[in-house]
Length: 328
Image (cartoon, rainbow, N blue to C red; front, side, top):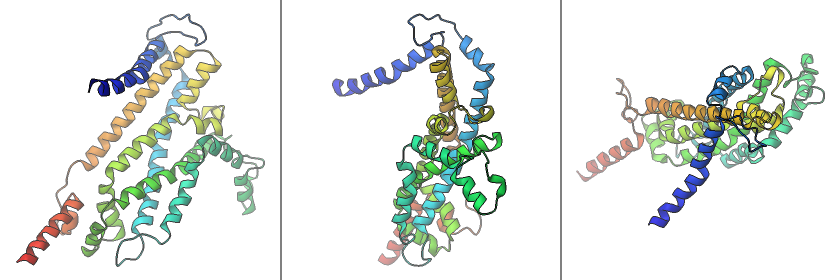
């Protein structure tokens, strides 16, 4: 027993605890990264971060990305997943759209391509001189986009980059949500139809509560991915965009460490990024708990099926009462 318990603990300590301790120590030094010589400077690196306009700009960009990209991506993925799995005929068995497997495969294609390839491809699509996007817009009559620099304009660079990240992630989360919805018993949807529920009401009252944990996990995972965002942003705008409009903390960290040789200062940025990630995860847990962790009292004239906070338990209770009536 000691061996089975000690091995994973040792791996965790070696590959997680010790690196975290090293990072915390290096963040308190002026280590250049290329010399064994270092001096402890205490909290000077963190004080310097508070006055580093470039870092603060990158932090704001990360916060904006974390607010917009996960929300839009997951709303779009949920919408597609619900339509694919629960749409179709309004009567009979709930089986989703015909050819739903085709939609799932097509939507998953972008996720199967490495992020750096996606970034480089979209950088070519956004190219002001020979980009596909400007060519299409010009072809349908928008002459103002003849040489528009999507990644070179302060107002357009961040939205254009966000679109690429959203486009690249929708497919994976669509497949994830489809699998989660498939796990909800079809009898629940059929019972909801008997109670007169429409598509939208069923999605809100049955589908979302049933896969709430999946949505929460997806939100945290995608939020952490967005807080990094290094690969996408480095491929789209290696320099951080016009006026650092697309610069992220991870980009600024890499530039500080490897171009300026300030590993101690860069490590302090990494510590701040880790703290921001933990705060984000805690906020998501709190919001989902407050939104779905408490059962609400049913409103007057609410169908019995929706008056209950837990659809599956309500269905089982209904089946039990029907069996008792048959026995009588």
